[in-house]
Length: 72
Image (cartoon, rainbow, N blue to C red; front, side):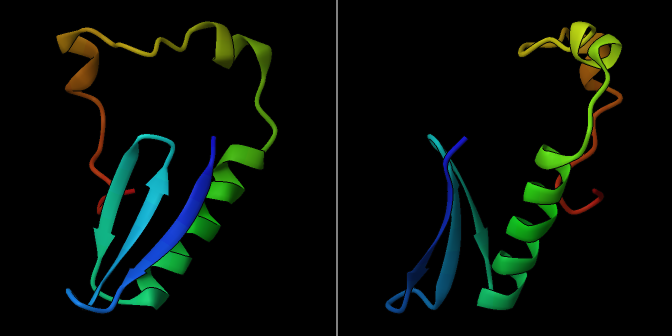
């Protein structure tokens, strides 16, 4: 996954891009903190059992258990 921060001085916003996805933040500090946490989670050890249960498109029932980025 390609992750980088874009600074938009015209809108006074920061964007964190993750491949084709982007998330807006009010400050550069918030954006950098998000990137650090995301990288830590991506680089953390993962068990094969956990990875085998993962699906890129969970069903509606599985979505009910997902949290939004602010809750994470």
